[in-house]
Length: 302
Image (cartoon, rainbow, N blue to C red; front, side, top):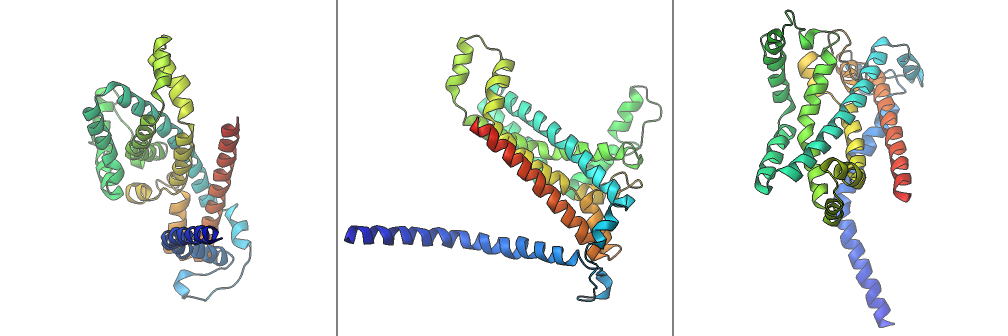
């Protein structure tokens, strides 16, 4: 009896310690995620003009959501965001996985660490500074334009001012800036893979590409799933590069959903309409994450 009471007290004490550590994070999630989400849902049902002051709004219910689908700027921002995500996420994952495997297999231990740190540096740099550097690279007299002229292109495009080239130019910046982070994550996962599988493949005469395809890629599926989800979320939230480098232009070429929320709320003061766009963005990310989670769960059960 005394042993059972002592065990219950110990379990209760351990649970209290665990909840004590979890409580700050839970409070922060409620204060800075859940409550703002509920406020956004509430405001999205109103016609609140930011300049009219707090509380001066009328309920329009779902009119904001109905207007979105006839709003050419919203349609353009949605299309650009989807294109941005569909291209940048897979390209970033493929490049980072290949680079991580090459660094792990062909670089010496100390050199590999230096390379990973060097590649990681853009991820911790200020996005405004990165944007300023790439604006110089994309300028009329920058290295890209000079290279194209040297290759025979007499009139190379002004990347950030061209309707066709502006969005791909932003994609390239995003892929470059996030590559080091993904390489770092993949490299950490590679060190945890069982080496006996690679040794068995070496005995059987497997090439580097065969080991990469049939051992490395399948074993890194959980890491790839994590990076896919976080990559999609990041690509749907892209804002800094658009705001600094193009201001959404030329025209609507680089308008993204988050940038459209920003301009609608703080440039045109239509907070209710902007909240409706934010709600649409939230549910899109929620649905994509659920689909990926279900797909990953099925793969793990096989």
